[in-house]
Length: 469
Ligand SMILES: Cc1cc2nc3c(=O)[nH]c(=O)nc-3n(C[C@H](O)[C@H](O)[C@H](O)COP(=O)(O)OP(=O)(O)OC[C@H]3O[C@@H](n4cnc5c(N)ncnc54)[C@H](O)[C@@H]3O)c2cc1C
Image (cartoon, rainbow, N blue to C red; front, side, top):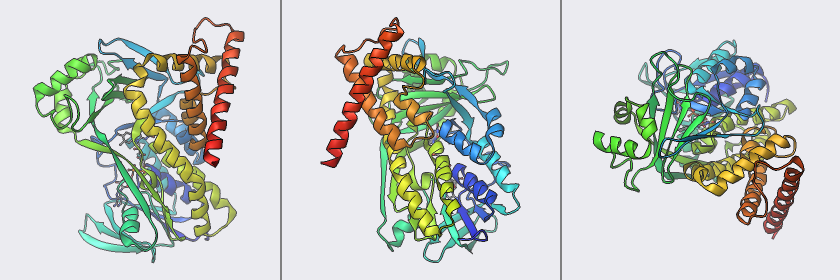
């Protein structure tokens, strides 16, 4: 591996453009090939997660490439979940008891454009749009593209190729179809899909509902969420089964039925969405799945990163954050002057355990957001956790905080500790073993904290014993 190595990146989405920028900053010669037109010139975002929850792991990546200040103006802070019940009553459930811990809503297009601008500004990075990778000859480090503008095929060689071409990765497909080595691959779809809708800005350009929250209408079997945009609108996403239940994507085929559904379950949202029917029938319904695979690399020639290596369902708001974190973690291995194969191996070995963990956590959160947020014991737990975080900011972090705001611990550690804490708290609250009263003195709260810690440690110890059996 030398600085003169030519690097080819397939896919200029969020991960690929950040990787191009970072490798460019490190002095590699980088060529990026993207299937779609340049999103800075053509509007291609419609119907595809227009905005995203952006949090501390993603921000850490922006710090790595010196973009923290440029990204801030693109962010709308969301301090908690604003839960909407069937009658339209709302309650704000903060994400953390620490005031400085919040997530942000950010436009996918704006963030991607910023990363592309910064990468393109480097003389050693070149972007090529309208190039679809058809397959990758990973043995000869050769990528085959179809060029939409000239309608021709072209093959490009490089010293190393990175596949950051998302959940349907062409590099991953080439590994799988090539049958040249033991490549494991799984793709699990949820029975639910999603459709994007919108709440348009108010006539005065302001927000029609509370701006600084992630709105959730959780209805057990399905849910609606909304995240704010800088122009005063909200991107609304309906998560619903394709075929189960009285209302599902397969049977919501008429205007009347869609209105019935929203009238019954999302009345207060419907009042803000006169454009519902247009959006509903114009925007696509898309599936949600988890992709796991290994190995992520072939020798020192090619490496998968981001969704191409580990696509997850969106319920923890971590897919992009995890893909950005890939770049941060990968970057650490570039300092020691080792060859690409050694770097790829070491990266995958330390990283996969964390991306597997966030994949599992994201499935857990699907159930939590749909239903548990409305469950009384769950709400008691969240209330107590917020008080503990507020009173003992250096001693307690909920599972959500560990995953979202603790960018210096891995997802696996966050998952293990967080799940044990959840189990401890839920058991103790159900058994009336601890109080959740908001009127506790600090001494009483301290006792609760000690009990939670002791119970959590006991569960972690049991887990360790079971794992070693
Ligand atoms: C509904 C939804 C909501 C989400 N919400 C969040 C959230 O709130 N927070 C969060 O952190 N994550 C969220 N995610 C996940 C996030 O979108 C992904 O994890 C993230 O986009 C991964 O980045 P990536 O660059 O790896 O892949 P992508 O962003 O998919 O980029 C891949 C790029 O490769 C290009 N490409 C694809 N195939 C080829 C080819 N054959 N040749 C050349 N180029 C190709 C694509 O055009 C694209 O530009 C959400 C996802 C969905 C579906």
